[in-house]
Amino acid sequence: MSRAPYKIDRLATIVVAILMLALGLVLLDWRYHLVLHGYPKQISLGSLAIWADTSWWAWAFAAITLLLGVLGLWWLLAHLRRNTIKATKMPQSGPQGTITMDTSSLANAIAQTLQDAGPFSSVAANATQDGRATTVLVNAYPDQQTDGPSIIQAIQEMRAHLRSAFPDHGVSARVLIARPRGSGKSSASARVR
Image (cartoon, rainbow, N blue to C red; front, side, top):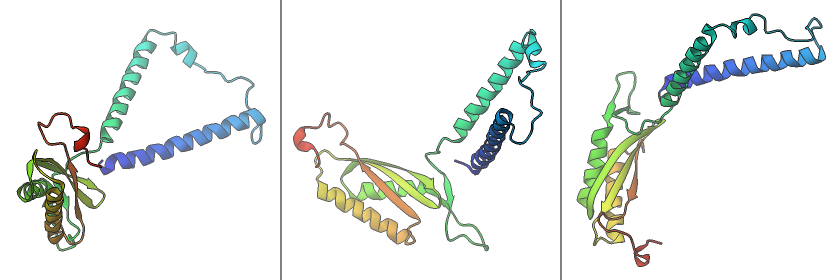
């Protein structure tokens, strides 16, 4: 999520909280006359009741409702988490310059490293950003005849390559081993416990 929705969220939360608090205090004072005593016994809506009987009221209400609906939809879409990122700023950046990393190339390199090191029919990866940490999500599909130790060894080799390239732990990988493609339903004896 970009920083703009965060700022709008904070501002909207503060404004709504202040308005709700003020309305609550006014209603309490109206009921118990704690501060002011000049409140009327009944609250009048004034010309709002007259406006509701006019022909343009329904159209204005519909337009405002549509505008609020579009605003709410934009708000929801702005909060969708972006699954992949194209580049990220490296922690080694400083006043002398900014170092950026092409995360799609990194994800492809990690997938290729795992594909070369292990018995996988296919490997796919993409990078996500969570704060300052970059995580590469890897989906690996092992061959039909592969065994557990060879998968573990391939993942450890990939992890060693990643640690040698990023010793500050700024990049991590999460590997999901899926059922081999074309294997159909797994039998009870093939389940990993």
